[in-house]
Image: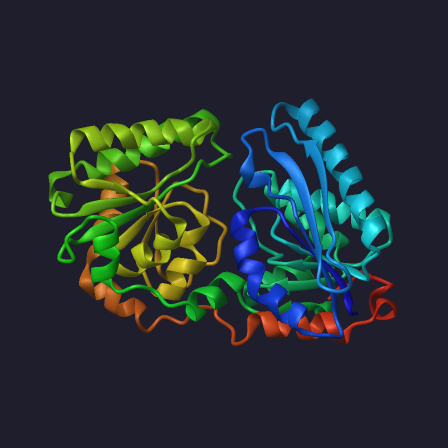
Length: 384
C-alpha cells in the first residue's frame, strides 16, 4: 500500500513517528498524508487537523472542533464530533491505510472512523496495558479494529494474538521511542549541568511524575508520599531535577506539592525547562523516581534505575530496571536506596531490553508497503 495516512495526536507521539514519516516521505512511490491534531496546544483540547501532503501542490487544511474533557456526557459528544471530523478528513484524503500510534481516546475515534469507512488500520504500540484507566479499553478496541499491528515487545505481540489477532499480521518491531533515543546525540553531564545551572559534580535524582487517572484525587497523596520520602536527610546530597507534571487538573495539584518542596529546600529542586533536556537528565541521573511512560522504555534503553511510584506502570513490561514502590514514603525510600546502589546500576549495564530492535521504522515501512488492500480485506479471528 502506497497511499498512507499517519495520524499524530500529541507533540510527543509526533516525535516518535518522525523517523517513519521521514522515510515514507523520501520514497517517491509513497503518497503520504500526515494529520496532526495538535491536541496539546489548548487547555480546552482544541482539535486542529493540519493536513500536509508530500506530492502535488502544497495543501494545508485545517479542521477545528472543541473536545471537552468533562463528564461522561460531554466526552461522548466530543468523541462523536471527533469521529465525524476524522471521517471528513479521510473522505478528502482517500487513503489506502490509516496508521495510528498509541491508545488514546483520540486514536480510538480515528480507528472507528476508518473502520466505518472501510479503510484498513495499522496500529503502532498495540498490546500494551495502562493499569486501571480507560485507555486500556481504547487500546484493545483499536486492536480488534486494526488489520496490521506493530508491537514494542514479544510480550505485547503475544497479548495481541491472545485477543484473536492473526500472528501473520502482528509484528514485534521494537519501540520507536527506543529507536529514537539510540539515534540521537545526548549531551555529556557537564554540558547538561551547565544548561541547568548546576555544578557538573552534582549528583541528582530525576523526578518524572504524571497524574494517575485511576486514583483520582488520591494523586495528592501519591505525590505527597514521594516528597515525604525525598525529604529524608539521607538524600540531602542529591539535587532533584524535576519534569513538570502539568499545569491543570491533578497535575496542578502535584505541581503545588513540588513547589512546597522547592520552598523547603531552596536551590535543591530544579525544573526541566526544555523537553529536549529530558534524555540527558535520564542519562546522567543516579536514579529516576516516577510513574511516567519515560520510566519504561526510555529508562530501559538508557539502563537507568527507576523507582516506579504507585501502580500506574504495574502492567508495563519491566526487564528489571524498575523497582515497584507503593505510595508510602517508607516503601519509596527503601526502593530508592536499592536504585541508588552502584551494584544495581552495574547489573543494568548487562540487561537485555526487549524494546530495542534494529531499524524499527524501516520494519514498519516494509510491512506497510508489502501488504495490499486485498491482502488485509478479510480479517478473521485467530483461535490459536
